[in-house]
Image: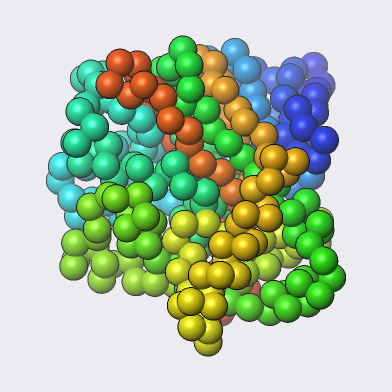
Length: 293
Ligand code: OGA
Ligand code: MN
């Protein structure tokens, strides 16, 4: 059976058919998916039976798993299973809805601000996979933005102005904006601010994209005020409707994306009434770190 790729948006996002993720994919299938990610950025697989160990094994075919950093907080323990799996949503380990004031909920509020995964770490995220275990009947979508198309649509003078800029990324900036508890001193020490390029080129396609998001705090060598003005302007440009796609979750879907070519955010839902639980795995972009070294 060969795979099929059905476009869901004019510039990115395809629905992948002809693959059953409960069976171990062949090397050829993994290579085809990798090349689909290079081109289409976000892949949606519907009606998949996908157990946790299968997701961990599937993810590992694409690169090294990201290590969790939250081990410092025992109360967040249930968000991290083993090395590589975290649960995104509003449930506790027994599957019950946790109150909105619970630290597990508060610490995930940043997911609702535009970002690319782990831009506040080195290496940053490469691919992220979310599998729908519980999805609300309304709302709770994930919105994606094609930051390659957004870059291409900038006036040439702006592209020239920003091409070589670097930006400091800091998770506490997200937490402040999201009104989440800030990093403890020990966590802040384990997670110091990092710098990232504002514009990055995809190593395979060569296409340039905007590396934006809530952790982006200040442009290196610029004042906070000037940085904010430009970063806000670029984010407003990038997140215009024409560059975005809203994914409304169904049960048993896997959505997988390339963090180098997209930014995303979670959307609200009635979180004291409905359950939402997405099982997440993330692969690190080790090549980006090597490129900096
Ligand atoms: C994430 C994330 C968005 C969502 O898990 O990295 O940003 O819709 N999730 O839950
Ligand atoms: Mn995310």
